[in-house]
Amino acid sequence: MDKTFSINHPLLFILAGIAVLAVALQSVVFLRKAWKRAKELGFSEEKLRKLAVSSAVFSIAPAIAVGIGVITLSGALGLPLPWLRLSVVGAIMYELSAAETAASSMGVSLSGTLSATQFSTIAWTMTVGITTGLILIPLFCEKTTNGVSQIGMKDKKWGEHFTNALFFALIATFVGNGLADVTKGGAGVVSALVLLVSALLMVLCGLLRKKLGWKWLNDYAIPICMVLSMLAAIPLSSWIV
Image (cartoon, rainbow, N blue to C red; front, side):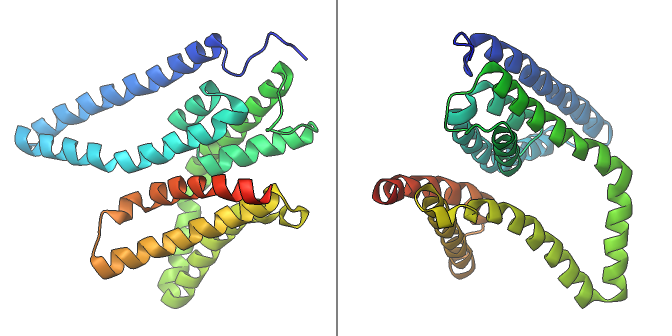
């Protein structure tokens, strides 16, 4: 193992920072172009400012979720790689699943120390895997969406069942990962209990939204459940592991 390698090496921060900065600059360019075009269409400065403020506030919730994702992955993969992955294109569920798959294929664990080769393999797996979506979506998304829409137009009830089934199949894939090791005890049990806590918290958020009319929970339920579930993992780990 290369003892000089570090998952938090300054060079990795520089490389990740360059990519993140490029994406941020791209966002600024498109924002300026959109602002200019909106004024050409007759939108007032006041209306544009209100729209910008509301958009900024709306982006806080997803930003919290992304920050939690970076923290979650940083223990195993350092800060630069998760920061890069979740700042450009990626999601915590996919990134963690891809990283664990790559690590297990090499016979190592994310909880252990990674060599440069192992880290590189995991990074490539996460990156190449996510790019398939960028290729498949432009090619097949419209056809797939039209097909699902046609099912709904022919039979609205069956269309809803079909869409829900697709959604639950996706969720079940990630839930299965959290329950796969439950029979082994220890960390597997903790993972299952944290999943249960998260589900119960989401149900509670839904009830509060319905009973008390807290519409802001629509945007903040996910980050709230993520934070509280992670906090719940601390005492659960000390009791079980």
